[in-house]
Every structure is written in structure tokens, then in C-alpha cells.
Image 1 (cartoon, rainbow, N blue to C red):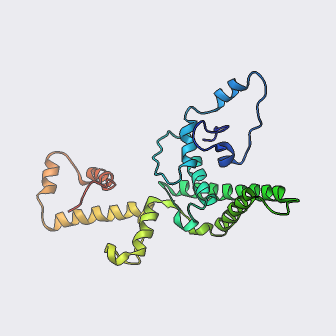
Image 2: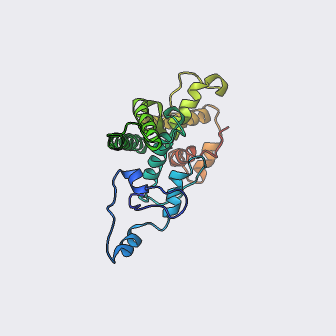
Image 3: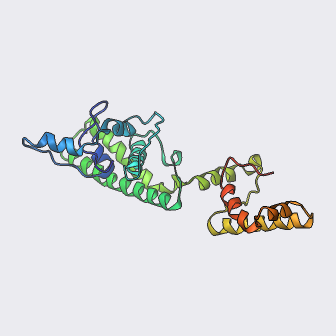
Length: 243
């Protein structure tokens, strides 16, 4: 997405590069223009354009690392605001890691601010000397107003991890979900300590009941410490149910 230049080949005409980066590419003049466009325009340009154009459609985007998924996501979020399709409290951007969530929020705010400044300047330029503003200018002013409101309400947009998103939903309806209202998500070092405590309790439970399981493990040359790593790995599998 970062290398997307020009306009989409099909559907609504969208300046995709400007939309997502705020930088316009000067027109190329000369016999080498086609070669430059061919070299810089991604082969999936039309599909990238759909991300910004088809705002009422659910889209699944699959791409490798560094291909511009975050840029496309930010561009779509800004487009939702600009067109009035959604407000900040209606947007949830979910990622896998806290670092990615922080980066997404930062980039989203940066593009919102850049678009707000760019469109505000365009409004001023178009409105200079106009006694009655044209319809296009009125629409542009509405977009500027939406962007400004979005910047003031930036905290109402959710940008976070899957865990924090699910935690937020559970906190809104703790009784229906059957969880304590003041619960906290377990992650990182705290999760490791919690798993270690669970494992120790399990071993104590076996010892107190004189379970033959430990003796069977010893016969095949397995020690509890060896199985602890397997327990830690399996505990992260959402398909495993614990009895």
C-alpha cells in the first residue's frame, strides 16, 4: 500500500496514494511514463482501491508482512470518518500485539491530522472570493468538520489487542458472561507465574492423593519438570478444554 500510485483502474476514481499517505505524486511526462507507472503501480491496485471505496462491504485482506495491511486499514478508517459512514465510537481496530495496537492508533491519528489540515487548506482556497459556495465546497466542509470532530473524540475509537477488546466486552456485561466485574486479563510474566502455580497445585494434588500417575511417569523415564513445558504450550491452545 505504501507504494500505491495513481488511481484505481476500475470503480470510483480514488487517489489512493494521497488518501493513505497525504503525498501527491507529480504527473510523469515523456515516453518513459508508462514504464514508470508499470514499475510502481502494484498489480493488485484495483483490489487495494476497493478497501477505500467499498466501505459498506466486509472485506478479508490476506497479504504478507510489509505489504501495507496497516496502511490500508488506517486508510479505510479515515475514509469511514470522512464520508460519515461511521463515527469514532463505532470503529474497533483489533490487532494481535500491544505494540501493533499502539502503532495503529498513532498512525490513525497522524493521517487524521494530515487530512484535516489538507482539506482545511483546500476549503480556504476554494472558498476565497466565492459569494455562494458551490455544492462540492459544502461537501468538503462537511468532511473537514467530521475529521475535526474525530480528532477531538480520538479516545472513543478502540484500537487494541484481541484480549483487550474481549475484556472490554466482558466488563460491559460481566453478569451475563459469568465473570467477576473487577477481573483482569492475565498476560506476559504474570501469565507465566499463574501457569507455574497451577502446575505446582496439580503436582500437590497428585501427591496428596497418592496418585499412581507419578510412578507411571517415572517408569517411562519422564519427570514432572519435563511435562511442565508441554503443559505451558498446550495451555495456550484455545481448542484444549481443561477438566
